[in-house]
Image 1: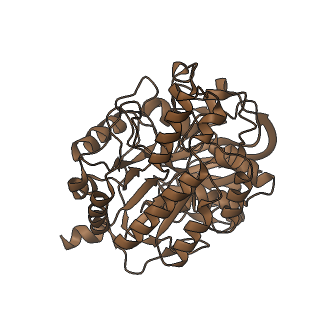
Image 2: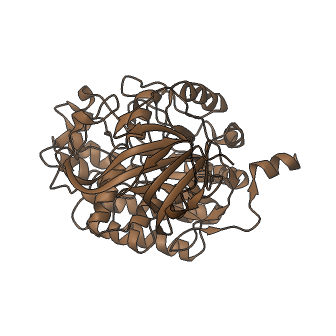
Image 3: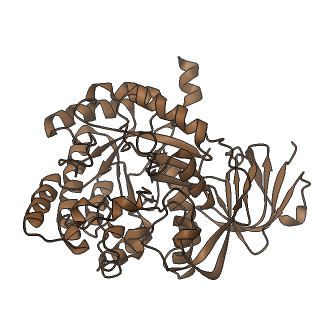
Length: 481
């Protein structure tokens, strides 16, 4: 075996351990980790002395806006942002101008993404009243999940994202179970949101805190409770997206203890920002669910330490400056740039002792890949894994400036905040693409990824997913066919 690239003398971080050594790469795959003293010859070396070497990060929750909203961002601009942040694989959401609901939408996005993206990407399809019957076709087309937007019973910029009614939803969940993919859930109570939004508008309430009040934590908890019961009755695998509130933690914990296979995700902005921090930022901070502050960030960090929260996603969703510049808070588009900052922010939390370095690799690489049936090809430094690697520096402080970020629109509520972690070098598919923070090659090489295993990991207990014996690989299924 020819070792084409060796990352020397680094502190190598996986979801299970932190070790010193050399990471060896052969072509586009990981060859292994060895003691540095062995000095295994390689065609090219990267010196990682004093730096931390992670698997390429996997963001399971981005909205690259392509196709249909490319004035906000596209696969190229946002994948460039991702790789600067050490993210080498993303799972793209369906709420673009062309909502992914049918097999032909999946194929269209695949063609666009592979022609433009610097990083690998997977797809999630929306579950709406008009596509319940085609869930098997979507899975055959390669989606990693279908997603229901429970909070969007009202119009959202004209996009067809409203959820099926409860009876139709239960019919849909039978198909979700049969296909084996996860149901991804935006869990907010749409009736509560619609009622409070309309009432507040009529009362001319018009601040960020009014937006926060229109999407209360009890509405999020109610939606989580409801979908957990529906999912339990249907026997499906689930993912609860972007948990923002303390109230959701015991609901998911109890469901896992009953044996439900549930991935629970939160986002850096819910861990680090408070409503008090964002009073002056107004529309810039608008995202759904809202940033709550108060006791919620500490509770969510506790949920990570307790093993209830499984993954981190960013909900990266760039919008234009004009989208944010409205007199009425109710006309402001939700979302902001986030994928480039997740790793620096998580490393900062680790440096401050809030989480462990292994948590960073677990939450934002290994578990994300396991959740979407991509592990160990993604999110891993095991031999045979894709040679995706992020080399990071931890310690020296730096100030986040949105003008230094990448992507089409880089507004961020973390503007001016101090971080103590930074991505230095990034390897994707065995190629050094980012060196000393600079992108060496913007050539699109990203490929659409499909589930590699069929239900290989269950998230039905605390302290991490468990491997399922006899899980079928795509190769095994193809052989049977």
